[in-house]
Amino acid sequence: MQDTELISLRERYIEDLKVNSIMLVRNQKQTGRTETQSFKVQKSKAIIDQIDHVLAKHYGFTDEELDFIINYDIKYRMGLS
Image 1: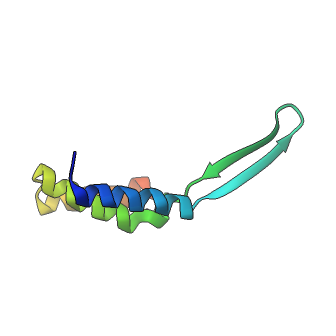
Image 2 (image 1 turned 90 degrees about the vertical axis):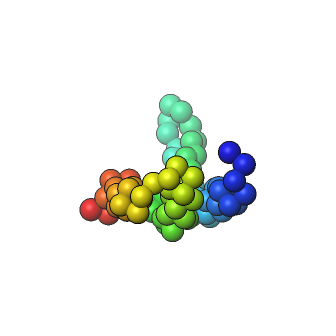
Image 3 (image 1 turned 120 degrees about the horizontal axis):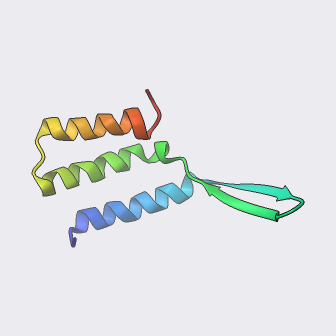
């Protein structure tokens, strides 16, 4: 897909995920030090919604279908229910 708006949103989303992530460090006897990057996807919800709007236009979704996707996202993916 060569949609410049979607490409721009993708870059903003990736950067936002990085900015809102934290590194978790664990030290264990058997495995030693491990680092895990933990992402706070909820903090990027505004950008995710913008991506959904662009994709909805691309696929010809109705306002009701877009509303369903955004509300599904809130309830199940963001854990805000």
